[in-house]
Length: 183
Image (cartoon, rainbow, N blue to C red; front, side):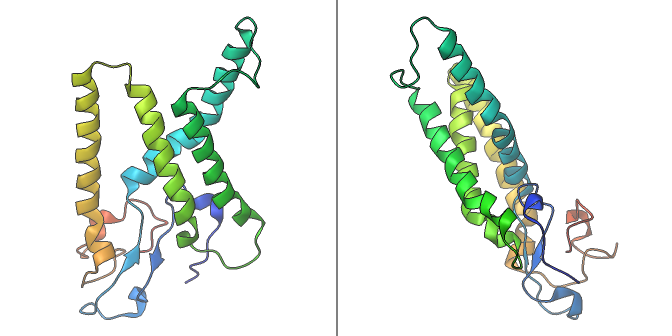
């Protein structure tokens, strides 16, 4: 089994990493996998895709305003933070496309930190105009879903005993949401 993977698969959470050689181990032996929380990783895709569009629209809107000078006009603090976070994500992710060495999902983790922070900043930007109760409800729902996914997948990263997930009798068969996940 080849565990090397391409960088374009990382933000999509399409790959796992087996730390224990689980496919070679007996069912009673401990198995540990590296798999990102699907809710967090897939939620982080939205800002990565839409932030450049949001930034371009903001710059076009400012340019249409009378007397706008891009060098003198300040951006909102949140937009400025989002720009720096997007730049940090890019710097920590894009170089892997040009590397010829073996690449694994854990190489994406530094970029993932920037991506998660960017999601928080853009969520704050999107929710700041909403009623306080609505904002609280949205954040509570997102937090509950985050905790649910964490609890659901924690047995993979904390270790489990039993058959691997490609068998329907496996205790983790229900966690193999994607065929590309080698669990």
